[in-house]
Image (cartoon, rainbow, N blue to C red; front, side, top):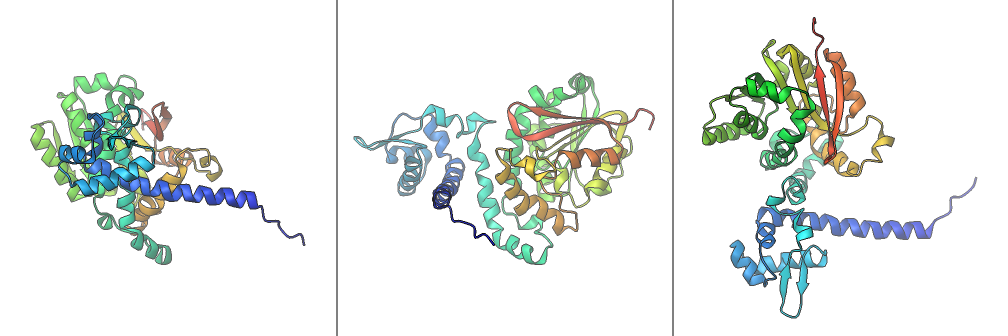
Length: 360
């Protein structure tokens, strides 16, 4: 039997790669803190400044700010001028780091690592018992998800997403009935309700926390054409009640995804549109190797999406269930003419535009 040789160069290259992973993982946490403290927002508008000046502007402890700046400087995120000990955030970097850069603010997405790290022990146990981790275990999940939704959905909703269904925005302007399933904190639905006052909007979600936050925002905006309710999506009883049903990053982590899609089919009017955003994965692992964010998406899936479904007795489709599986399940639910669209600025998602047979 031939003995495999040990490729020293390959091993050393992999070792260097793992050192990069350590540094990048640490940087992700520091970037999250930069977002949550508002430091990137402050630095974006400041000239080269000392750590004391930055801390005073942000209302933070100088000692903590100085140590955080050390991480940012050594990671080549922030420039350091040793002659006067000042720090500066280049405009080219700020374009991906401050709140005004939405939807390109990648610092907001770095919060997921702390959210997922919080449940690592629970996920470890799930590897042994196989039952998954419930939503209730995920600290700050709804807060971070709401911010992610604002960036990935709301920011492109009117210019890119709704136009995927021809004539839809004109129908919304005239006045139709809309349901958003898995609406969470209601960012997308409230944006549509404000934009299209003649239409009527309903948001369903299983989370009382999410619905409470959505209702609070609705009241603050004084919107009378939208209502929210706590519902198990698999038990919806609405029948031919809506002209448009939307699902933004929702279906793959359901306990009963096939039943949810069936209930959507029942709730949609015959000339209606079902618009579903979901992760741009393939049902074939070898194809996913080409996705630039595949390791991140599989990690989030393993530590959240797949696990919460399994925790509720579901199939655990996971975020990377893939386009082929999604198309099959939509067809099984009764949808026809399913178009799968991609948007140039959004490498994370597919958009499924589905219709029903006219005489079903």
